[in-house]
Length: 322
Image (tube, rainbow, N blue to C red; front, side, top):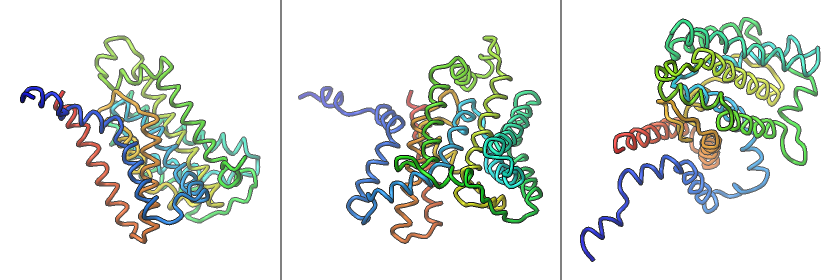
């Protein structure tokens, strides 16, 4: 056997990085599950998995919207504030019934998305700056609406969204599954999705090609904020109360982590919907594993930071070896 033959059988760095970028999140989930199978009692109990999937729903829904924004080479730091705003308006309108309450709460999110999208698309403000300002102002507005108080939500219809189930599957999980399917179709099967990805790949080239760049960016930020509002409604339904002071705190970081770990590059031009789902599930499983082993929550945050760094390194590493 010659040296040339041996070298042909050794995977190149590009190939290894490519495998990790495409399948790393799934490999990590499998390894984590195997660890818990051996070292974590009752982790594979049906009730435990049901709890984990319920808890991951808000992060997953927010991450779906974040993936769309990141796909355009943008970012949205205001999603947590949008959740708080949606929660703050629910007690004000819950007496009108479920549908009006949902429409108003999601409508509030859409308005915030319009504000973010307008600043980014038409004024030219950097996404991180625009959404950071809205993050701070939005949280403050939510506290003003709620008079800085926790307000109970007793509507059975609203509470059902976060607590009830059908055939053993929680409504919140079903809602998240439907949204995953809708976003996947939107990205992969529609002209809008193709235009979104083209804008993320090169905004200037998209403009020269005659694509409606500003309109697409506006819609993307509206969708992101609307999905965050849905997460706010579900979070409120789970708690049985509107708590704008804490609801959605730092969820933007978890959402960005899920998106990046799932294979969507921060440089834009791609949107990995199933990868985003897997990324959110991985984060939830890591958190649950640490909790079950009595590891302080601070270590969960450190683990999340390490995951972000590793994911970004893999993406940059693959780009360099191309």
